[in-house]
Image (tube, rainbow, N blue to C red; front, side):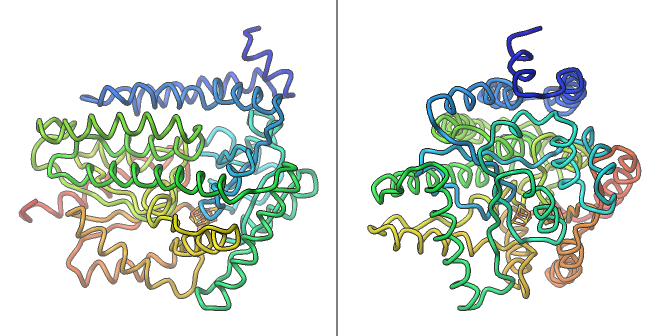
Length: 427
Ligand code: SF4
Ligand code: SF4
């Protein structure tokens, strides 16, 4: 048995089944990511990091825990990572992006919940998520019915904290959220035994802001007339932002951004001139899930922006770095996170306007609304977004799908029809 498999066995994982999961993921990675032409050289780091998500990163966290650090699993971009980092703990997103684990969840939970939740649950239930046994606490939120009721079940056996998200962005909603952020800080302090000091919190706020600025730079470079990077590679970087060690991630991203700037100057792009530009808006595509981007980019278009939690929702808006005392810092953190425009809010007019604005900014020829099956909030919000896009003269398509490949042919036909409908419209 390899050293790594021995580690997984020691953690109580089903090593044989985990090997099968890795083999299926390695094949998708080769076919979908590595097969792309003209990839930036700096993507080599992100390829290694993707490979290390079930290898080196796990070892790194196991070692850090031996030195006393705690790992906190997250499921949503509303979880303030600065607070976790300021307590010396390690945040890792636990969302599953593989169809492989879905059947294991369907044995124990209703089938009609979204694939992201089922994939995550299945990884845990089948003992193939290496982060499951090493997390010291998991943090959920009340963003959707699927998640909040799943938390009820899993919190019976896992050290769990639930952040209550308000449903409306009113003053009262803001007060509730600030209270939740304070309570979260206390819970993290209790778990880690550390007292969060303003100096360290300020440092982590700056670190997270650096990550956001770099991701924003990457996003702006994608908007160039000839995008220097494919949508699939940009998505991969975003997916790893939720898992990787943040300092190292920022350094590597800085190198990628520098290379992309040069590629824009030199006119180097994986896409031919005049390639149609698509904005993907909606549900997140977490690590392992490149389905919709792959279909779009192998149908002759380029994904030039992601309006999602593996896109703009993760990096837009910075935390004010001017606050001095911990209470003020928490207020600044709460304020930034509450600006995220997830479809769980009602009304959510800013998201509708934002999608139209983004489509204009990235000069999208069309918008594909990506909706995970059974995700009611994004599915219903798609109606208003489609209307707003129509009024702005931007063609769009709504795709509701799961993680499986069963509907891939049908989805490809619909994407191709959308792109064909653009013929005669100058790019
Ligand atoms: S879509 Fe909403 S619930 Fe899902 S990760 Fe994003 S903010 Fe959280
Ligand atoms: S994709 Fe939708 S249904 Fe699934 S976890 Fe996110 S908000 Fe909930």
